[in-house]
Length: 229
Image (cartoon, rainbow, N blue to C red; front, side):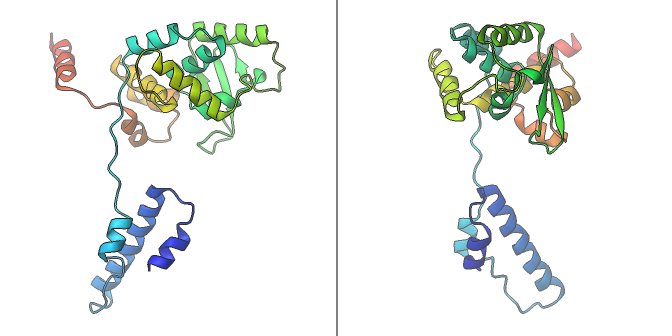
């Protein structure tokens, strides 16, 4: 069984490995409970349980608006500043930002081709100030319509985000900015459907809920007081 699971899980992520193991274990449990009670489940060995157990998720830090504002303000490089804003204000993934071409920008909308969702296109909506800065950057850099606006590699973009965090003493990765966009919008009163379908462009709400930060007792009391005051 270990050899079989190793072969089918080659190059798979841990969550995929765990899912396949769980499905196989469930199948053998069904056979044992409904067809042949004498068989033993080959997936129930201590070694397999240990190898394919669920990893404990590491809670991420939710960035406050003031922290993100300071980070963006202290980023002097125009390219890096727009990169940060598109992720933190537009909820974009870093890979999506790096694929944007000039002809994908339509005023306050950015058209994403072949997005992660599998759709043909998706639309990202951005604030006017960011749209203006983006258009100015395209014009100043004289970027052709069919060329990526940000002609850097993924590793360079991640490094730019990391350094932006270091400037204000925060350990940061690109997805933290996307999570901030969702959490800030949600806690500012934006309906969860807008956060999910417009900002994050998720296909279901359960995926969105995993992005939203854990609510502290102090924050819960603050909202309750506002609600009934």
